[in-house]
Length: 262
Image 1 (cartoon, rainbow, N blue to C red):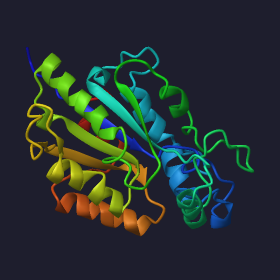
Image 2: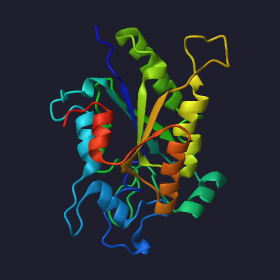
Image 3: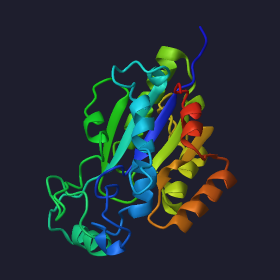
Image 4: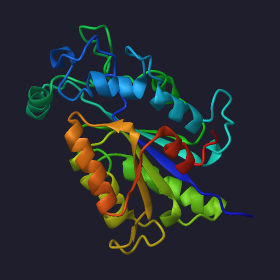
C-alpha cells in the first residue's frame, strides 16, 4: 500500500472577535484591538467593493470534505481549531487581558453589533461540531495558545499515533499548515519554530522525557492568515522561511500542499 501524506491544518483564532465584517476601515469600528481589521477581513472572508471571494471558507470547506464529507484528499486532512476563550471570572489576570486588548471571545456574550465574538466565523462555527474524527477544537485562555497548558499537544499526539498505527506514517512526516491569526510571536513560540525545532513529547518513548517528535514540513499560508499589523505578518513570513518552514502564497498553493483536489 502506498503511504499517504497526512496534513494537519491549525486554524488559529478564526473567531468573530477576530474575523468579522466591519462597515469601514476606521480602527474605532473594531470590536477589540485583536480584530484583523477591515482589509484583512475582506482579504480572507471576501466581500467589499470588489466582491472578493471567501478564501478561508473555500479552503476549510474542502479540508472538511465538502458537502458530503468525501472531497478528494480530505480523508488525510485533520483540522485543529485553536480558539481563544475568556471566561469573565472577574480575576485580575482576566481584567488585565481585557484592559490591554479589549473584551473578546467571552462565551455567550454578544457585542454592540449583535455578534457573539466567541463563535467561529461564518460556517466554521458549524464545522467545529463535526464528528468525523478529523475535526478537533482546542480552547485556550492565553497568548501561547498552541503548545503548553492546553489540549493542543494531546490532540496532535493522538493524530500522530493514529497516523502511524493505521497508515504507517511516521509522525515526523506529518505535514502542518498554519492558517488564521499568526504574528511573529506565535510563529516562534506556537507555530513553526516549536513544531520544527522543539517538537512535542514522543509517545513512542514515554520513559524518556527528552524524546520529542519534530515535524519536518511546517508551512504558513499567507493567503489564509492575518496579523493585526501587516508589517509584523510580513516579518513572520520571512522568519518562517529563515527557520526552514514553507510560505504558501496563494489559496491554490495551500490546497496543493494539503493534497486537496482543485
